[in-house]
Picture 1 (cartoon, rainbow, N blue to C red):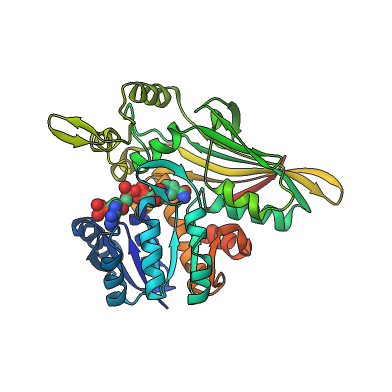
Picture 2 (picture 1 turned 90 degrees about the horizontal axis):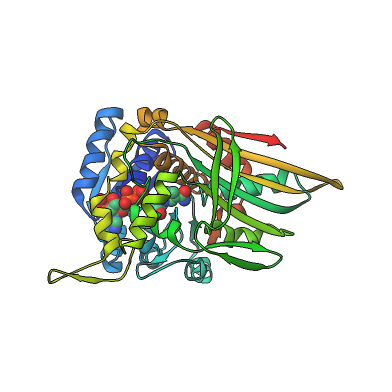
Length: 394
Ligand code: NDP
């Protein structure tokens, strides 16, 4: 039975709390966030729905001494970082100082530079190893489950995987002309950046949304899918041996792209300070204030998500193509957790990653990505915990 500290009471944090409360692996849960009011809301919901008590605390996760003090007070077996990618390094550092296991769902990002790299998190490997603690990086859906799908394909279907396409479709409709399904700042930074894919040992850069293909997503249908850079590719090229190409595609509707282009053209996606009526503001952060809070979209969202991987390669001398995917229904996830499917598909794997560590099914000293562990227990837990998956031979 584990004592856990969850940091970040946002859209994904709610799902993590709901799922951890229901799983017998975790017997003591503390939810901490920048604002105590965010935690108090979920504490009340959990009491009303499950008649379970969780502790709450206020913490600024940019402040290492404050994090260390909180960890020393709560004495958790592990910390689940469900705040923002900006806080990855400070929370990792606090975990190191207190010798506490760590998990997150997204790659570290510097607030002033929209780029994703594992370099700074991987640099903790030796110090975590020496301290006898583990960090599990990217335990969401993508990154996260997509990495586990690749490891599962490698283990059960191929001698060598040659190509991987990660295919992420959200066909949910929330009825707003424009909104993002998770933190707007993180989301818009991701999709307005240049695209990148990896082929024959090198990265190839594309203009944002330059490469498009149409994919027929099971239970959804044909959708325009655009090539983006996505962080799991950086670890997968290291760990899937023999890989020749990896790409990531995400679906976007016409309206989303038109809004994004206009916002970009007028400078609203800027991440540098501008002077506005004597005040310094960051356009992207101001835009976040104007846009609907992703945590409130659940109630209005209808439709499904479908995220998966298509791997091609060789098995027993034969060419083979495998598609592994999950379909998640926004209305069903709302019923279960008061959250839309994007938060759900991230929060459930975060809980499962913590469960794998606390049950010692995935436990090692150092910093690890998801595909470095045996995929089987994780895949089994996905089916049990609400994210059923399918395998198709194409
Ligand atoms: P939200 O913006 O809804 O929530 C983030 C929460 O973090 C907020 O509630 C905020 O707290 C808290 N927070 C922000 N800064 C601090 C700080 N300095 N100290 C303490 N708490 C802080 O984001 P989401 O829930 O949508 O996303 C959470 C994480 O999940 C992000 O890292 C995102 O990138 C990742 N993600 C991963 C996916 C995957 O598939 N791997 C997919 C989607 C998201 P407060 O309310 O108290 O101000």
